[in-house]
Amino acid sequence: MISQERLDLRQRKTRRQLTEALAQLLEERPFADISVVDLCERAMVHRTTFYSHFNDKQELLLYLLEQLEQECVETCLPQEGAANPRQYCLKAAEQALAFFHRRRSLYRACMAAGVQTKAHILEDSVAQELRDRLSKPPFDGHLYGRDPEIAARFYVGAMLSVIRWWLTEPYPLSQEELLRNVARLLPEFPGE
Figure (cartoon, rainbow, N blue to C red):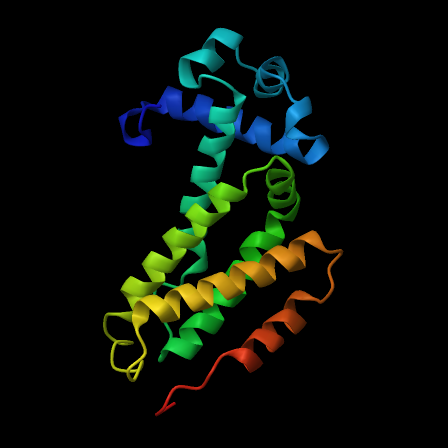
């Protein structure tokens, strides 16, 4: 597959149309019931255009998930504004809940399509990014002997598990109540 950076504007537009078509169709029916013809009709592109971008619908699904992964990392992890790791993680939890709530149907459709392996890649990406942020100022002095790698993986793994449960069940708690529970579970760091 061609990297996004090497695509011209027209190619990017076509890929966006195809990923949007797949996202819409996934909310309507199972992935197995979606054909390349369905995708092309919804995206208003010719089949030859589809095949000039993707080998099959599975490759398009992986591309869609890569786009969502990138958006998740950029959206869920705050860029600034937290004084300590706990506040940062709470803000990240709030933003992650909002991100996944907006994409609840798509997330559930992707899980039903059997892309759990890609969820582990998302977990790794977010954990690595969080580890990097916890290892640098202003947070590096707040961990008090806690390994940033372990802290990041613990937090991200727990949050994604809670989010997966929250999205796949019929809203067991409101977004606000879930966030209050997460806040109660996050430890205070010395000096906070």
